[in-house]
Image (cartoon, helix red, strand yellow):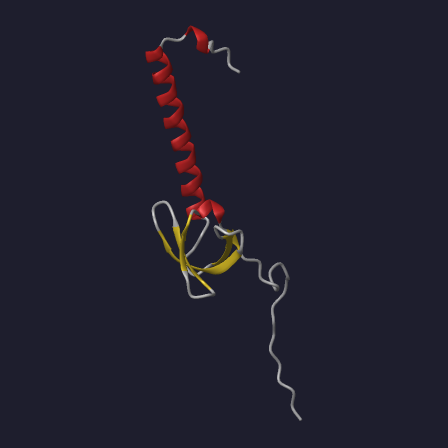
Length: 106
C-alpha cells in the first residue's frame, strides 16, 4: 500500500482514517454519477438490466439528482442509477450519408 501501518494507529486515528476514506469514496461516486447524468438526455433511448437480469429498454423521461427515470417499452417506470444505463444502439447508427426519399412514378 502507501506505507500506512494500521497496527500503529490508535482507535481514534483509525476512525478518522475510516471517515476520510468513506468521504473520498462518496465524492468519487458522486462525480461518476454526475458525469453519467450529463451524458444522458431526456427522450434518449437506453437499456439496462433489471433486478432479475432481464434487459429492459425505454426512454429517459426525467433526470433526478442521483437517478434517471426510464419509461420502459412494457409501460413500467424505473428509477435507475445513470451508471447502469447504456445508450441503445440504433440499426442505422454509424452509417454515413443522408437518407433521401424518392417516389417512383408509374
